[in-house]
Length: 387
Image 1: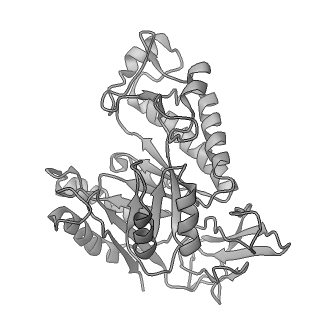
Image 2: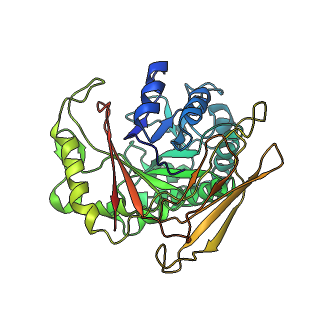
Image 3: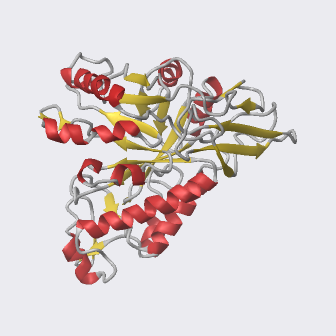
């Protein structure tokens, strides 16, 4: 859900022990949080304190992890099921382990059965939780993990022989998962690798809720992109959906050390954002509220209905707004309408009602950008207005 609350930044967690103080800090400072999928208590606490914060569960599209117990799994499919059903890629008869990540094994993402199971398991895992959707990692563009696709294809006639085939299979998984999560009233935000290299890649893969670029303006502290490459990433500022852009930054620790990389990312945003013709906000997503004490917690909104915009001042160009509805435990319907290009939602946290702005989509369009780095405890989120 798009937030209007004060606060900046995006909080991305990759599995270290979670301290209560971190949740307190996030409530006070962030608009977006990406947690591990088993951190449901923390997700509920974030949504209780900040209902308009977007809270996503981390999942990996491409790997199966041998070290994960079933109840603490970041991959979409567990090791035992993937092994028993033949969903682990093999090379010369042996499971293909990622060269840079021990214990991570390549999933057969080119298998339609794997894609269907991943979609079903991940979508179902959100039931009864406070998560607004999923951040799906490893929507890769190249063979970053030493897979050796031609060698895999020798023993697997269905496997792609090159990375173009791997990208195609992942694109089909993103589309299938995106449709299923949308039908469930949730977001899908893939980590879209190197979208700048393929026209339309960002918009296609971000169409189900947004996109994550973990290499915004550079690979790392000492490997920043040249001007041409950096300029090719500016399309990601225009949406669709939620934009998470991770800037390289020097140093380590919880406190930002003032490195120039983070400031560079912010500066480029301020240069580019004002000239964008449109500045769309995140699309509609799940609002998770408790209708009354004792009701079933975190009943998700279900069903999406698109209606034409009624105000030329807002979307225009045939754009639409979406109305999301759910049946609350009190028997009353919860409805909210908004334009994908205008921040038009308002409502009370504990109440079951929300309404769109008067006059249809006449609100000022906004776009939120999160600049995040591992050591940037006080990340920067800014918004732009096109009028």
